[in-house]
Structure formats: C-alpha cells, structure tokens
Image (tube, rainbow, N blue to C red; front, side, top):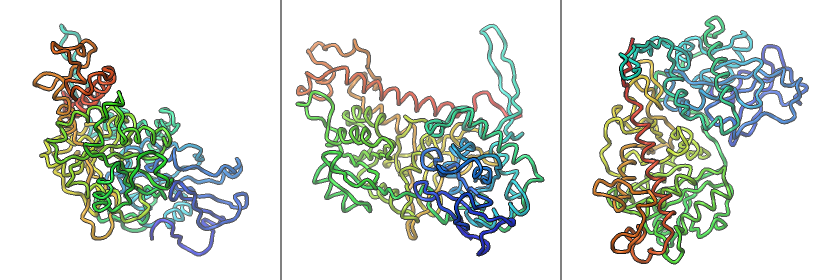
Length: 553
C-alpha cells in the first residue's frame, strides 16, 4: 500500500478526527482523511521528506493558529544504511534538514522512507495508536548509524607539530558518517543554508534525530517487508521531485533546431532572446555547439547569442533550474576549443549544471531528462541537489564520459541514473578511497553507500547516467588553455603576462586572431583566472579523499 493510502474509510486514528498532510508536486499541500476546517480537526499528521528541498518548495498553511499547531504530529522520513539507491537520492541534503522551516516540532517521529513509500498511512496509524516514535524497530540501528557514532569508523592518525617535534598520535573514537563524509566539509550545506536554515539548526535537527533513534523502547516493529539491502527492486509510487515544470531544449540556430528536434524526446525551440521562451512551465536545457561559443569580433566583448541568453535568463528567472549542454565531435576536439575558456567563465556563474557531451551522446542527454517513470519528475532539480556539494562544482558528463576511459577514484560525487537499476560503473571509479572520504556516505560494510542514486525510469528504458569525473574535467580545463602558456598548458593570468609580445600581439590576438586585437584584455584575464580556480578546486576536493595518516583503530 503506497503513500496516500489509508487503512480504513473513516477519518479517525487513535479515536481522534484526523487529517494527514503530505507535500505533492511543487510543494503543494495534499490532505487525506478529514477535510474539516483546521479548528475542527483533533489531530494533524504531517509527513515531511527532508530530502526534497523543504526550504524552497514546501511550507505549512499560513492560517495555522497556535492552537492548530499544537495538534500537529510531525513524521520525518529518513533513509538508512539498507535503503534502496532510489530512497538514498539526495540523502546528503536530507540529513541536514531535520529542522524544517515553520514546521511544528513539538511531537516529532521518524519513519524509514523505504517503508513509508511502500506501506504509507498504515504506519502512521500504528505509530499513533501504539504511541511509538520510530519505525521500523528492525531498521532503527541502521538509521541511527547513518547519523550517529559508529565504533567501526574510529581511527587514529599522527598529527605533526613544529619541525623539531615528533608527530603525536591522536585517536578519534566518536565518528559519524554524517560528520566525516558530509558535514565536516560543509558539503551540500549551501542548500539548506541558502533556504534560510542556520547552521545551528542543522545541528539541532541532528541532535533531535540522534535522541529519537537512540531509544529502542520507542520503536514499532515492522508491519511487513519492503525492498531493502540496497536493492534496486524498489520503485517509488510517486515522483521524488514532482513538478509541473518540464524540460525544454533551447537551441540557437536553424540547423541545431532541425538536428535536436529529431534527436531529442523533449520539445526543442529556437531562441534568439529570453522573450522567445514563453512557457513558464518549462525549465530550459541549452544545447550549445562550437559555433554558439564563438564571439563576433565587432562586439568588442565576449557575447554570443547563446551566452547572452544564458546570462539574461538567469537574471530574469534566478529560481528556475537552468541546465547547459556543451557539445562537440569528441573530447579531443572540445579540449582544443579556446572559446570554451570564455564560455566556462559564464557557465560557472549562471548555469545550475553543465554537461559536456559528444554529438553521439546527445540522445542520452535527452533521455536522461525525459525517460522517467513519472512524467512530472523534475530530473534537473534532482541532479543539481544530488550532485553539487558546492555551488561551483557543477560540471558533468554522461556515464560514457565522452568516450574517454575513466581513471580509478575519478568520479567526485555519487552518480545519478535514470533507470531501473544502477549502470554498473565499477566501484573503484568513485573517489571514495576510505571510510572517511568526503561526498560518499560510508555503508555498513565500510564501502561507499550506493555510489549510484536512482530515479525511476519509464518501462523499457535501459537507463542513462550522469557523473562528475574530476580528472576528465580538469583535463578539459587544461586543454582549452593550451594556447595561453607553455608546452605544459600552464596558464598565464597575471596582468603583466598580457603585455604585447615581440610581434606586437596581445593574448586575444594570439589566441583568436587579428580580428580580436582590440579587445579588452582584462575580460580574458578574469575568464582564464576563473577557469584556473575551478581546476584547482576540483584538484583540492579530489585529493582530500585519500586516507592520509588515518588508520582504523
């Protein structure tokens, strides 16, 4: 019995007139059982999934008085170490959002999300009637170990002092997955904090859940089995990020319109300006080909139709998900396109996510955003929330990696797959090098917990995967700057590096030709520096996954 189902036809639970509240598409409030006015209802059961961006999309009714709020029992959903890859989607955000904004927290209870999506309101009814706080009892320890201290994660390491001092061995015996994999790095923190939650609220919620899950006597035994042990057999009965907003492909030439209208399974429109995209119920996926990145020398600054659309759309609709797909013949050709250096400067600031792809991968890209089980699934939002631990790190490829071979420990964050099962990327390709690595929650076997997260696919669709391969992205960033420096591709970004060379050329002219000799050099400096900073950030976060001097106790 899925979410939304009730065990009986009446509106009473535990002898009280009850209404159950869930949040549907775009955070819309959905009521079940009693539909009486709030003042006439004796009990309000509020079900809240912290993984689904609670601070932007969902809110409780504005007309709730203090008397109404006293009737509310809040059920927070959370995954466990045995949850399915689908129920672990955006878990890194959910674990930081146990203090949802404007939600009554006088009486809080916790339900494992896999169980709730399978058994629905029967769980709420049983918990109220038996006055239990945690469900199911059999998974209580597995939920607790996802956020609480686990002796298996304890470690020792040598701490170096001054040069003349010997290293001192320190032991860390209270280690939690929540802290060592996520919160110590403040990874994904910008999502709840950007929505208005203080960092103190993150820890307040963590402590509340820790207290609830630590009390074994408050747990209710399971009402029945559901898929577990990281099974991919589980299929959610409703969209994870349900929304009326659907994807639309945006192109910038008649040739691209003809090409992508044939390839894509989503609507494709030709836009010369933001006003050309008239449908407010769409979120744009911009398909940019090499010619869309090349600037007209007459404009005297880096502006193309595609780049101007990007910046104007972001200014006009800052809260709408904006995806960019940069395409070329192959990786080698893309990595030699110096215009991409200028484009990435804009993509860092204005795109929510950027996917680098070959022309042959374009259909994969379209399928990733369109071939979902639930037509109202907002894949763009799920991709961003699952895969972006820090705002600037939002560059991806498809799982086929532009035809390049993935190196071990290259994929920086959990992959996102629209499919019926994981794509089968080898575990060693993910950058989880030890139990304390960032961005990958550690499983009960001390291996990465579901390094691929699933969005349910339409029947018959084999699947499409998006990854964040740090090495490949760094290689691309270095390649597009091959004309800017020495043979090793080192970047020259200091102001003195942009003086005329012995032939009287500035960098614009050296890289793009004589037509660009009068362009403002500082625009080039800023863009190149931004790309170089991005490459350093990828290197930094990839490197910190190594165990260093940490050794298990």
